[in-house]
Length: 41
Figure (cartoon, rainbow, N blue to C red):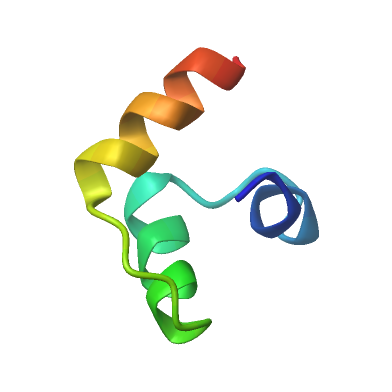
């Protein structure tokens, strides 16, 4: 998740990161991504 965020110079929010994770075959809910991103800041 942090790799996707940094690959895109911090421009991706939780929705785009969720879509990218789904494209990479990870099953994760957008609310989980949002919560994890909040704890990383």
